[in-house]
Amino acid sequence: MTISMQLGNRRVDETNLPYVIAEIGVNHEGSLATAKLLIEAAKRGGADAAKFQTYKAGLIASKFSPSYWDTSKEPTTSQYELFTKYDAFGEAEYIELANHCKKFEIEFVSTPFDLGAVAMLDPLVKYFKIASADITNPPLLKRVAATGKPVILSTGASNIDEIDAALAILREAGATQICLLHCILNYPTKNENANLGMLTDLRNRYPELMLGYSDHTVPNEEMTSLVTAHLLGAVVLEKHFTLDKTLPGNDHYHAMDENDLARFIVKIKEVHSLLGPTRAKAAIATEAISRLNARRSIVLSRDLKSGHIITQDDLVAKRPGTGVSPMHWDQVVGKKIVHDLPEDHILTWDDLAKS
Image 1 (spheres, rainbow, N blue to C red):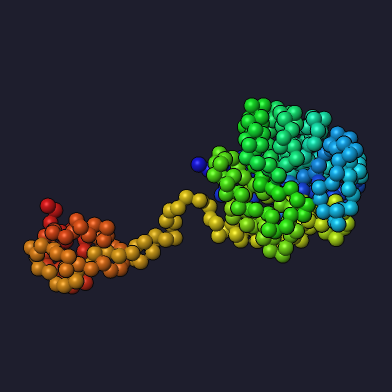
Image 2: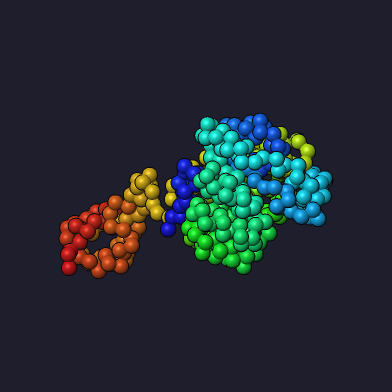
């Protein structure tokens, strides 16, 4: 069964190139102009979607919420304080960003972090992305599912029971197309903590769902984490995106930039061509000549006279495979030859008596 899912204007399945989401988040740092530049850079780099984050500090975190990121990179120790820095955008700004995405032919997406954000974004997005932190937030899950749109659900810091519960809530509330993203909720994620092998467990447990990967590792030249995730079955790939990886704080330090993204797109096209158009094992068209000439036929090891009853010692298996296959060896032994045949003759069924 080939799993497919409609994400914006693309029908995505396991045999396609991966669907790449440039997670801008709030790396615009409250500047609409910067947000637009990020959209344009994501398009030039080859992303399918430019994704933002829609929240208000007072609705996402209490004033007493401690940090969970690397404070040597982002020194703010209060979630509330950090979110307050970047929650200036409202409906007008998101409409403008959605229009800017449309102008540059890249999908606009934004993760909602409260029920009002779901309602506001609903007319602007073709699918919803739910953050890992909200996998145990039934009101948000239900509101997103009730839109009837496809859902991408990150699974960072979750266990199987929590994933099962979230899926049950989403499905009961109306979600029919769901993609699960493997994710590690560390900012940044060390390579030894990425645990990309967990994609295999997700595939085994949820064979009916599309899989993806939300990456928080520091990008390297080869974009190894994203390439590996795709090889392990991740069809949707999300990574934080910035104009400048040297900028301090927030999500710049583990993000990719336009050059990383463009390099990854080249690499993944090469890898994808190696994977091929199907996951079902079968001989392909270009192997037809090999099947014919590199396989073996039953060949005579000596001259044989008409009427001879074939024995094991009369036969040998040799290339090419244009005659009777050695798969029929036991059927040929004991058959009568119907005309004189020379040594090294490639046996055909016409050489043998019918009974």
